[in-house]
Image 1 (cartoon, rainbow, N blue to C red):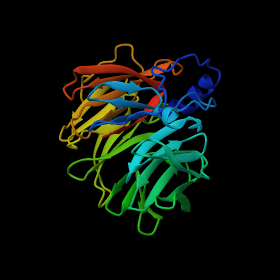
Image 2 (cartoon, helix red, strand yellow):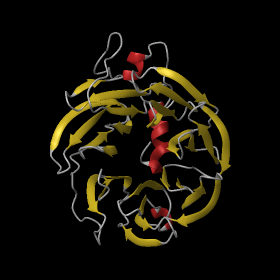
Image 3 (cartoon, helix red, strand yellow):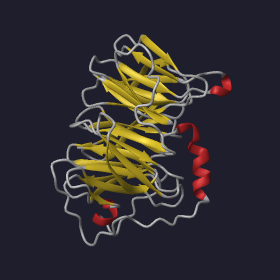
Image 4 (cartoon, rainbow, N blue to C red):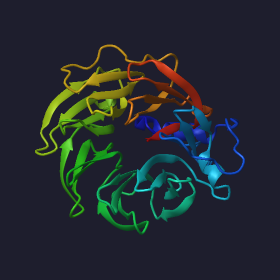
Length: 345
């Protein structure tokens, strides 16, 4: 779940919630995945209900398939809390958090090819070479190493605490650790932790800009007087070059960057956009909250369209808003419950 401060609270609420939403589309048979561009949205579902799903969206025709995974794999249950999605070569890897597994499907037809078992509570995958990837974890106190060819866990990197989003810069993997206040640095050639940078509590997003600078957003912890912050870091010498501090009442999350790697966007109740050369945080919202519960966000890597999920009350199906990069609403459609992960191609 994206707003990491409230993951445990929302999970308890969802456990007792009544799931009543019907799918938007009930496909019969298999789905024809066509078009030059496609959007896949992972929906967490309700904690402990094993109702995670994947929504398919064609941005050219605006076709929506509510659960393409179920449509293509009628005898296979995705599992409990689908956290994230990533494409490696010609396969999609679906990280299913509370089921402790990664489900691998073909990018051609979204049919299951295999699954990787043995995780505690996996979160995100970072490819670090053609055959090797890292998997962060909520409870394992270690990073799992997976082989994309054999589809197996091949080893571990000890790392105490909750590991979250990751970013690769040359032979360094930068790993957020929300409870430990640090971003840890892993040497991907030797699979060892070699350094760390203090970024504050509840780090929830890391991106690399066009100048090869890392940006890390941390939600902070007001109970101990630690405000939310946005850091620009030199990944070569690990120096913090800039720090932007939010007010005590703010709790920003989910940092993303545009296709040209020039603009940062984040959710802070509303949505804010900031140029990487700006000297101050944006004073005004880019897309204002209209009684929405903005939960997650992604930017298309080919036309900069912005996709934002509204989790509603965490029980209903999410609403997805598609905006142009100038902030004009293009289309609104429904996804599954707690839409949080995007893959846009």
